[in-house]
Length: 384
Ligand code: PMP
Ligand code: GLN
Image (tube, rainbow, N blue to C red; front, side):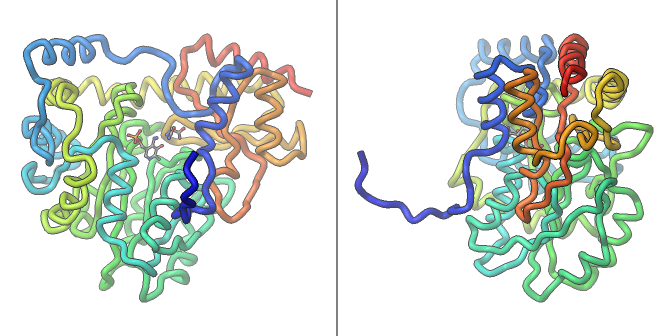
């Protein structure tokens, strides 16, 4: 046993709620609507392509920026989706997942004492990523229950120390999405400042109700000051692949790559080689919003037999549910109780707030087979 004490860099951090709730779900053999991952198979064609390229010998390092044909396919896709020209050699880096891309972007720009605006509830890696760099998260609550951004509050919280704003649309954990109006507000807030934007767009293709994804990539003036982060895991139903990418201006990408090359160097080669081809299949990503919207709607319908009141979700894998009509327990206690007693795991949304907010909302993940959703709703209907 080591006798050498470590002065923690993250003294306020425990184990992530995803690991805690999935562990509990396994322990109690519960249906896991907590952690966000599909319970159905990814594309067989893509699996076959990976195995094919492995057999052809694509098993050694690629350049640290990522496999060039994959970066070319990404640039082509961005031109098609967002009408923006991105240079694959200088603006795209392949990363081991979206989380890593965000961490690397923050590590690239932050100096001790810098402030970063973070909206809550928010994906749980942001704040530790900021703090590990000696910087300070400046927290702003999204407006409950629609979880919109309060831009007046943003203006109030901007200071000479503000180094970045983290945006996430479609949003985890709430499923809210930003609009053209938010982009206008953002533009006016950052105009004339040196504030960076970290835009977490891992759910870019999971957007519903005919809404369009307001990617930062659509706006060259904003892209100049942004790091835009994506994940193949969400797009191709393979969250365990942990592969994604970051896009920025060429100048920012030089610094990003300095950090990346000594942390990861390069990512898994066979997946990159397979994806370089697979990305050209537009239907594979364009069909996603329809498939996922059907799942959302099916879950909403099923939940009518329960006493949960669902909030609005326009995107992502997730939807919030209030349980006022069932209990006044705090959301963590309630989530643990229903996992143990009913056999359904969900994520308590207070886990996505550092500031203690608990609106008594659970986050349910609906990217599951119909029969999984049916079984979960039936169990949830039985709650007293
Ligand atoms: N951002 C958000 C909001 C997410 O939900 C996820 C999914 N875990 C990620 C980033 C990171 O994705 P990845 O698994 O590719 O790291
Ligand atoms: N993005 C997924 C979620 O929010 C999983 C994240 C994780 O396990 N780190 O549930």
